[in-house]
Image 1 (cartoon, rainbow, N blue to C red):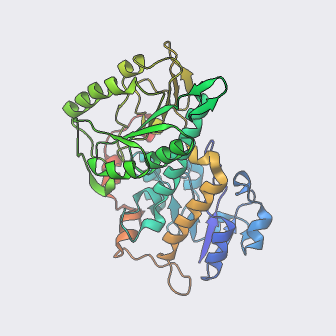
Image 2 (image 1 turned 60 degrees about the horizontal axis):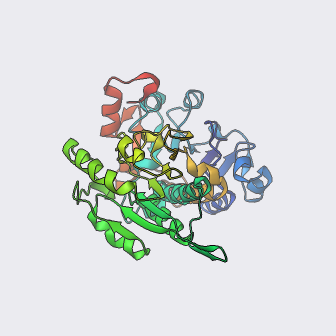
Length: 381
């Protein structure tokens, strides 16, 4: 089998799907890699490094399996045929145009976002590997934007108290944000509707914020379930009283395939002191802050800085690519036989769960519902 590694064309995307160390591991399994010239440049990887690892510089779309990071563009979709397989972030629950394009191509498409969250699939969990990077970077952004120190400092001019940081949403990104803020010396508090994560927060030396609204709202796959309208209203009311006491708020709450829940209302922002910072990691899904402007950083009339960066993992492209490539490699391993030939087994629960389309059929029920539902411009539901 041959695997192709195209140069990513999506705006702002600096990662590459496979790195030289992974290509070397694939070669040991009888898999040849064809890498587009310049595919790794923005991730600090040269063509020469790919060649030294056993890869060939050429047309990646001639390969049997295409490894991508961002969803394929319309031009890239036109290069797919029924005899090809594509693996990558495919936005199967939000991007109807991509799902339709994959269906029309007849290709087999596996989405990294759809890999089941099971113990066996942990090595393929790209959402978690990239969320770690997002959580880390969010804290650095907060520290850069905030007009005060994170740690407590004792100086000849007196003692500076440590910054107080609230992390809303304690998944992988939230836990990394908590750990990073602690390493920088801040006094950190974490909040999540899933009461079970409280112990994880405390294990990092942070305080767990307990609210009554939506308490214990565990959902499927380790995610929080979507709260009812009544629970959301009660949650926001409680949070308004708490948020104003913190110097920095980092939000990470997401519900797969849904608009991000609003955790920081306009009233909560109004109650924050000038110089406070909100870093909203849910900007690509609309944002957890009511005043978020996705992709922008701005200061409100009352002096609160709100940052909603997009695609944070791409800002650390070298390490993000290394981690993502290992996730993709782990998935490819179960897609090939002992001789390195492509052999897709839909009886395998991971393969079945990750496959969005195959042979012109949409296999994922939520993706099927997406394309059958009237959509707004751009194919977004």
